[in-house]
Amino acid sequence: MKRILAQCIKELVQFRRDGLTLALAFLLPFMTLVIFGFAIRLESKNIPLIVQDFDQTNLSSSYIERLYATNQFVPKPWSGEDPVRDAIDRGIAKAAVIIPPQFSGDVQANRSTPVQVLIDGTDVNNARVIQNSIQGVTTFFMQEQGLLPSTSSITSRIRLWFNPGRLESLYIVPGVYGVVLWIFPSLLSALAMVREKEKGTILQVYASSISATELLLGKALAYLLIATSEALVVIGLGSLIFQVGVIGNPIILVLGTLLFVTDSVLFGLLLGVRTNNQNAAVQGVALVGFVTSLLLSGFIYPLNNIPFPLSLVSNIVPARYYINITRDAFVRAIGWTGVSFDLLILVIFGFVLFNISRRILSRMQLPG
Image (cartoon, rainbow, N blue to C red):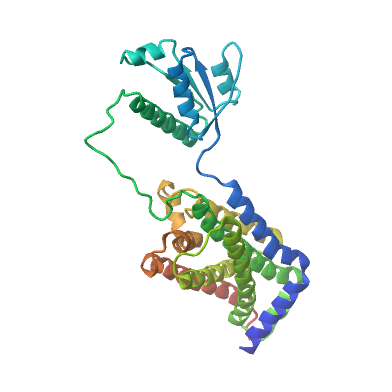
């Protein structure tokens, strides 16, 4: 135990003396939180829309006003020989609505009138949102004008659970915690282990009586304390900036965070054991850690949308399970029954990562 504590204290002293590492530990996670929290938006807003009205009546003007009243579209006037096509081709507008000359007369005569809608399909998701929005506005306008029955035999009453205000921060910010707390603790521990190799001090460790288990536990304990501090800073500032508070059992969040940052530190130590320079360690964290936690964890894209065989890889991404824990703590508040499996998986990940690192490091040490 004394050797483990001595190794831990040595790592903490070296960490405190390195200003660049301090910035990497606390400043960059905060910047990542702010950038991701404010930059990522899943709901399309302020979509530029151009309308070409050939009818020029009060009814067509009312329809145009109804389109913009959704606060999802913004008017984008454009002129030219073919303003609609030109605006979409140039990327000035994402959609265009063309109202025919006979629009008002056909509506008043209860005749079908075609309204042409052109949508930029470069972004498929955005195009689908525009299509559904314009269809919804058109249906509402027709009901308002008495062209559709005001009542129907089937009425859907929709209730949004967990996030009735549809705040994107409740979905994005808890996911950012998983990405940030996986990248930076693992990066710090990986660099610490590789630095021993580059400076040659690892040879003294190999020749000493300290075991691989004691060395890994000492380093893991030191960077677990640092990672816990990172978690407090990131989650605390995230709650203040984005007004996202814990609504579930805080014990679950604390336990899940400790397990997750432990896995992150052990993952970094594993990369440090396997690599021989800092460039390789950074690339390993960026490729294996950042890419998988960003794209294969359910942070942005639903796990059901991940195609086979990448869907199998997502099962061994620890951030996937921690994001379930954070979203339960900040959004759903289901409790132990909803996240007990995720906690168990994090424990298993930590056990596997530690044993792999220990075996590799044991083979490197000189026999006593």
